[in-house]
Length: 294
Image (cartoon, rainbow, N blue to C red; front, side, top):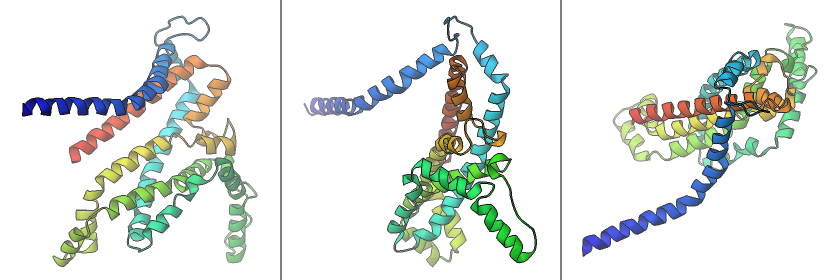
């Protein structure tokens, strides 16, 4: 009799679980999976006649120079930004975690996320324009030291535009990274650190032997979010430099926007499938790597 009650309770809990999960599953199915399936089907057809052309659309985008440039810049941007963001966020979070007002301070780091994109773009233009504040500051320093003359570098119209984009990304996303690091650091029991110090462990040993191993979950979350957010920097890049920026600043989002304007939906569909597949593979590889470490 007891076994029957236990089985009925498990069955009831299972149904309750699915009932709570069903709205989210339906939302993902209707607004994500079904549209992506439609894009996947369209990637094998022409736009106007809907004729099946096999992998012709994929061959077209991989032979496209703009696509190659956008992929190269996007991968470069991701490989540069994620390590910088992870390291900078950890370097700031470690000393902040030792302050008594860490809870108040960490809320200030989220301020860049609350700022409208248009406001950020205006600031970047004022700073990095050819006659902007950065060039004025460098000119003043050069005059005071006598090391150089007037500086008129066009940061948004040269290869330096890539590093402007990197700076913009790190400035905007460092806040939530610091908050996530702080949550992980403050979640480590003080007893572990105190016991290690009593046993004669140095601060570096405590960091590498206790703090870092306990931050694996935070590191995984930060890397995944940073990776996904690196594909969302388009608004800043587009508003600063337009649809056709300097080639070092030309990302996949610029390419998708231009194909959309030109109604090249067959290319967009094929490229979207490739990008979606790439994101899925990378996330699964990261998940597998973290599972092995645990």
